[in-house]
Image (cartoon, rainbow, N blue to C red; front, side):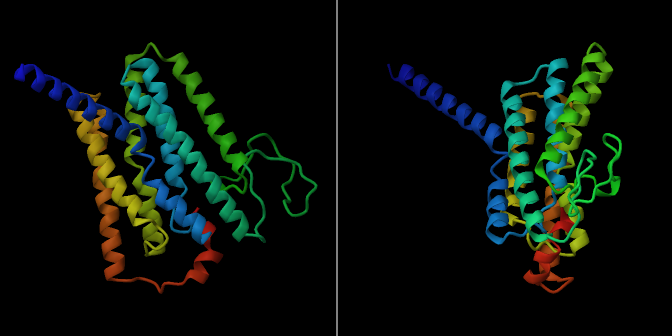
Length: 271
């Protein structure tokens, strides 16, 4: 009787741990962006956050979803990718609104060329997608980011459909997906290096990155996920620790004076 009760307790505990782990996998990647989102909304300053982080995660998760058509992996990871894509679009929307509000005298930039009569916009008539590459991912409207993401998704889906029977293509697609995600922290790393400061970046976000990536990598190892997943997970943890070192270094050896006034007028440079 006692053995049966003990087995039931172990079974319930095992299910509870499984559900907690599943929830952490699906929503854990989103949690780090909550404090960053709140900081940007509160200060109306997005200088410390690089929107290229959103670009990296959008590309990585779109490719990961396409990879699943060629090689099956857990449904939890699929939902994780979908939720992360939605989260990054929300972050982009906020950062675009903040940049537009702080750059009133800046010419509007768009993903798709238009012929507008608005003197403020001043975009001459050009061919479709004939945009200035120097302003790539620095557009003035959220709809331009949506158009770019949609165009990339359709193009990647079409190429995947053509080469889905190729094992080499599928494995390469999986590698690109997880390698892109492994490079998640590099735009923020470079942004901090350019600014010679981590001001405006949420340290809570980076700490959550580190703990989440460590947990995720361990999860990949325990569940015997494809090798691309856990090798790039280790690289991601390394980048996270490098950013934490930047936090220590720039706080211990300041490279520029802290000025909130300047931050607001130059917020779009980091975007």
